Amino acid sequence: PTFAVGRTQELIMILSDLGYNIYVDGMGNSITSIYLHTPGFFRSGNEFKKAVKKTVPIRNQRERLQAKNADIIITTSGMLDGGPVLSHIRGLLEDEKSAIFITGYQVDGTNGRSLLENGTLNIDGSSVRPKMKVEFFDLSAHAGHDDLVKFIDAVNPKRVILCHGEMREKLLEDLANYEVILPYNGNELELS
Image (cartoon, rainbow, N blue to C red; front, side, top):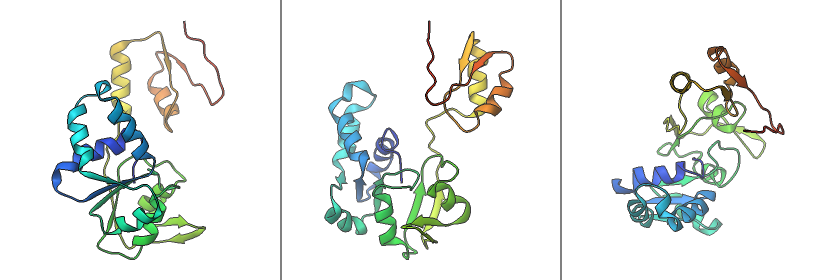
C-alpha cells in the first residue's frame, strides 16, 4: 500500500530495475499519468517514463484479479482504509508467501496502524489477521522533528505556522522562542 501522490512514483523508480513483475493500481495510476505529461517539472523525467513502461496498470476488477500473480502490486490507499488495497489483501489473506510492505506513516486509528501494532485489519466490518508478512519501510517525504527544529533555527523566521502533523504540540514546546501559529481546519490566515 502506498500514497497516490509522490510515493507511488517513488516506488516505481526504486523497483523498476529490479526485474520484478510490477502492477500499479488505484489513484496512483492517475497521478502517474499526470507525472508522465509534465516531465519537465521534476528530476529524472525520462528515467521515470522508462520505469513506468516496465509496470502494468490495473484499471478494473478483472485486471485486479489477474494481478494476483504479480511479484509486486503498488496500490492505494496508503493507510489501508479503502481503495483497491483491500481487494488485493482479501485475495491474499491466507498466503504466507506474500507480504505487505507499508511505506509511509500510519495515522492512529487507521487499518495500517492497526496492522503494524496488532497484526489485524478491519475488512468489511470484521477483524482479520493476515498470514502475510508485514514490514514497514520509512520512505517519509517529511523532515523529522529534530530536522524541523534545526531548519527553523537556521532560518530564524518571525513566525512559524504549524499546519500538519500529530505531534505539532510537541514541536510547539521546542519552538518557545518563536511566534508559533497553530491553525485548525477552517481557520483562515492572511499572509503579508
